[in-house]
Image (cartoon, rainbow, N blue to C red; front, side, top):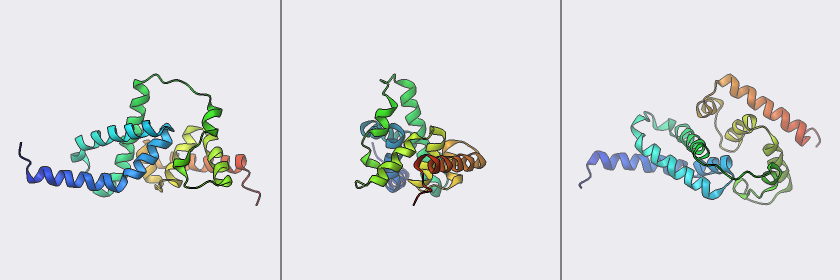
Length: 170
């Protein structure tokens, strides 16, 4: 089967978009699942969906939030399909999560633990903003919320971190 020039152009566009954002997609999938193998699977499935619907992406500048939304939905699909073994939440908080930081640091570990103690509705927008650098508008698109709801959740997340992590002390 012979490839057309438009097929080759489509493939180059896709490879460029995915190449630019693959590390962030994996980091987000890992944060959602807390499992490196599952994060890889989620990203692979998301890439297949993105390839199939690439023509629906009108502006390449919108690729990152578009891809993160696909990753988020693929992660949700995985948990809808599977009945996973449950784990005590205390084990998750203390679990090694080196994918989110590059070197051992007590303050980083304490902050990570405080972030994991947040309710998911506050934790997710905070991680999207702080770790992945998204604007509130992008977070609203990814999480399918209003901009005001994102701002409220970010404010409450920071307030809870200040209370729980005792950031008032210096």
